[in-house]
Length: 342
Image (cartoon, rainbow, N blue to C red; front, side, top):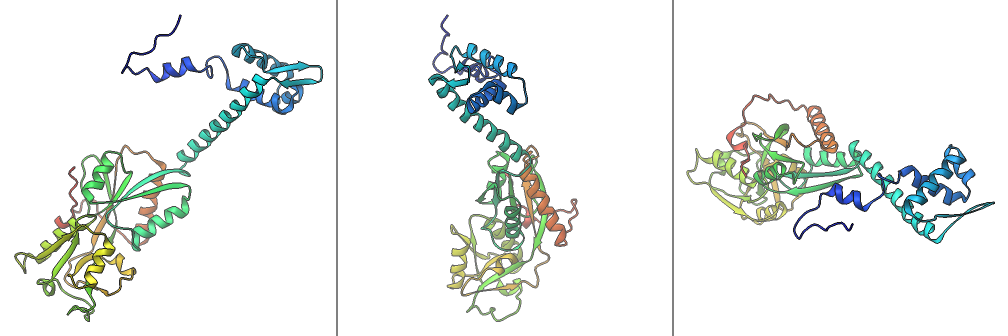
């Protein structure tokens, strides 16, 4: 009786579709295909059986059953051995390819489970610079060269949403966010510095104070850590200037630094960027900045990826090596809280 096709728009159950389209796993055991390939290689049942460590009769019986299941003669038997039929040659060429794919699938699955291979999608608050985050990702790539590391830059609220929606495995953000359905872990701290054009009136100083910057124009990016830095600038200058002059731009970090060098204004950044040379820009520490800012990792508790686990373990180890200590009960400063809302 002819099998009825599913109606238009009706989805057939995958397991049923697989069962009625394939003999493998139901009528044809995998060992039969492996033994058939061995016979095809040796063109002799006895030598094939010896190479596999089984009896000749067992191989002969299994090949005969395979031919009956297929309804196809795979081998022509003669007193000196066997030879492949045309149908047998065609069939076993495809079987050999399939066995190679299966072997690759098994090997790859094991490598992914062990963290040797796989894909890791990482969200960042800014382009990778030197400092903790740049060194962390560089070291991770050295330890896991076969892992496909994919980087996405964006605002904290956007990358956190991507983690919640399983588009990212982890994101690194400025501050210590509290996200109801995600884990977060503070990992390192960096001092804030001010980037000034070389011709700025304070550029010759070894350090500056917030009060001395009250009348300057601050430049911030709309993306990445820009929104959080904007809030921080407003918070710090609120006591000295009712309406701080802060301009936002849809530009990358390098373009923003070029704007600083050309005298558009000054910008706030973390000390890691000081290891990168930007012509016409100098970086100065802020004497009256209360404390360094904290950076954290955010990830889903449902993500069981081994490569994610390895990255977080490496990050915590490097944080401890750098002397980072953090009490989980300590609340974050308001200006360090990224907006986790969708």
